[in-house]
Image (cartoon, rainbow over all chains, first blue to last red):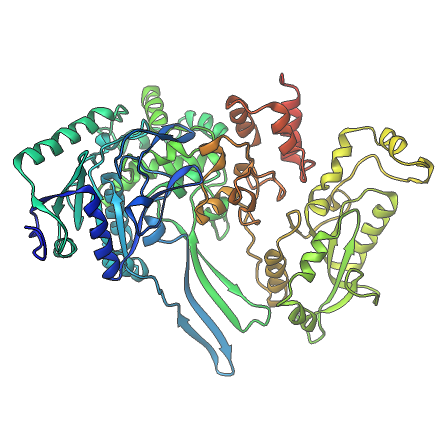
Length: 375
Length: 262
């Protein structure tokens, strides 16, 4: 099985761990820019990588509300580190994006759409929670009545190498949100990491092609049994439980609850939760004209419902208080999103919990609101 | 700025280090364009020629620290259609407002050989404490891009687009790792207005608030959490009492913190 033949779609193969480098090389040679987890500035972030040695091998996260610390482990796992502050939306829906330029001439204005010169991305190590997040952003940007061409272009060309999550952080709750830890669909390749090898599920023709020339074998029933065991172990690791059966109504019934005031007293409206969230999709569009008034550039940037200006409309601001903005975020994320898109806007990745400077925990706030009854 | 005549611009300085005026001179690629679009009537940092008012726009750097400053700032206001403060001194009182919490006479006696020559007010105050200010550009120093944005918007007649949100937004857009969450470094970025491009956190240090309080700032909550993380009260006070420490939100948070045990 080694050599030029590639495993067919939906087959499962096994390969020695260092052979992953060959997969990455094949992706690079096909013109993909590889983006994967790597350690920088005391955290695991997503950035351009080329080599398996750049993965966070031997690192894990100790995480709780308001704190996230990298820890050394004896593990040699390539993908043992849970998710950091970055998510894949940085690449599909970038924080700053040029939309167009306009020039004034003697006849009026000419508009020129900005060119997106980004190469196709290969996302290396997408966990199930984040794969669901990408699918949720697909709903927002391309599956609705209007398709966002910029997102669509990047998304269509992206290669997804997913991983079955083998280490969860204490902030994780994907099992409650039904978004993990096992990857089920929406990938080109899905890896499960064993101590000495990777079990690989082939999800697409593109996934099959990059395994050409890679040292693989068909996975045995025993290998697949080990995968199941690892997934069961991860599920047991996820201690955080969130009840979702009474959503969205639970939140609608508490729109005027005084408890929102208590949260607002703690909330900084700094917007960190929304910017680390892999599904939050709000943006602002700004025109930047030059001194001469003849050239202008239109850009799109990440925005947030926590920012006062975000809710500024003609005649005033619809969410002038931090209370109204926090309530908007949480009620939309866990509640109104279901009415809007048919599923929750939360994938249980725990980023908003870990990266909140004042340790606000959306799962705890939900339990507190529930225990307080409708108001 | 309608009409054929070029708008008349004046740049004044009160108690300050000149750094914000230098940011205007640092606009190297745009300075000639600016000089072509406006008549620079008063800008001693750049030229000795002085043209009398009235001015369409006055940029004022520095805080008010003397009786003479009080008179000058009133005079500037009378002579200017629009008064814009530039920098932490003019907009919030500056680092020199540290003296507002101390005995200035005692300082004067201990520092100057002939304290009788020193005529100063007991407090360093922002321009807005004395006259109406039309717009404030924050920062220590100001961002030259923000200055350019304000001048451009005035020339074109549109609203200036300056952020009022937190420094965290700039950190997250840039992809900076939060120094507070990942390493427990004291940072007041979550209550500070953006504009610097998240400069300090980008170099692995905490924000010390030089752009002043953001909109809807909640310093009490942040200070409480910083203390719960084990950051010493003196360290938190040092951040709050810095370049914009006299700004209302930071000042009142610091006063409350002073009353707690160290």
